[in-house]
Length: 391
Image 1 (cartoon, one colour):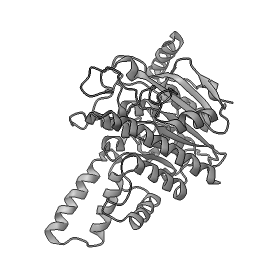
Image 2 (spheres, one colour; image 1 turned 90 degrees about the vertical axis):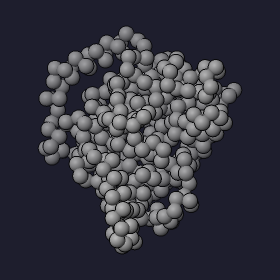
Image 3 (cartoon, helix red, strand yellow; image 1 turned 30 degrees about the horizontal axis):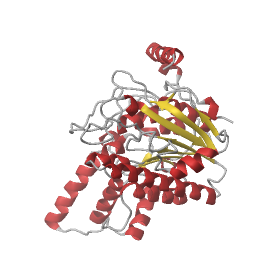
């Protein structure tokens, strides 16, 4: 880590302590929002924790499309890291929030679960910055989340007093669909007597998970219409629609067709199944993400709304350990050097093509770079714009 970056962090913390917030307008006042024309941004969390060896190493990659096609279209940062600071963890929720907020923070689970990652950020997310600056409705600021990481459903807004729930993103996930479906089934009179009472309690429990929403548990009309179309197509059993990261790809493709999000974050996670102990779960998960990237790219190129007006940002949530003596291979909870080593690719209009950058950069640099691309300020972020990527 360079001294310049460390000094900038201390400077930003000092400015915040002196009252940077007082210089910003009141979040409760009517924002002077502008219409947003682009570019659209698709953030792909190459998630579940991946090492450089199985992703950007040409001799060992399980993501050939990403490495041999997409990387040639943009700027690849081969030496991105999650800085080794006290309290900075290399795991999925933390890495996602470092990317979304542009800050390294110590996070503690507020849900009381074993290995829980129900975190609440003190600083604004990329979605809050965008929606405070521009007239972007919530259904066009989307997170697509995995079914096995319910804690991450609730990273959609921060606790910052100048941003927060008013500027939150919407979330597409099986948890959201199940909540919508159960509510609709109750409204349609599908249950009687004691079963209805049990289902009502179950719905209340699902809705209570989003307790910070201030009682506004339903998503927008556009999102509920999206779920109704999903229900009509795939039915109600869950046995027909894709699962795992293939589900996230399908949700994202449908969202792009039907909702046209301006800012979309896809939280892939299948490589994390390596915790079951089989290395092929990990490498297959990487291949599934690679297939998803190929489908997303094809969809953007075929859609006039996105074609020539969309920037992709691909970045892992964390790396993985390389200790072969561990009983479960490729852990990421021990803060080893390789678990802090990640990468990033940025490509699209206005981004330098065919460039590889080997200097060390930071995961928290991603948000300021997105802010630069989408033309919104990120005053609480610690990172810097990745200027080599800007054509």
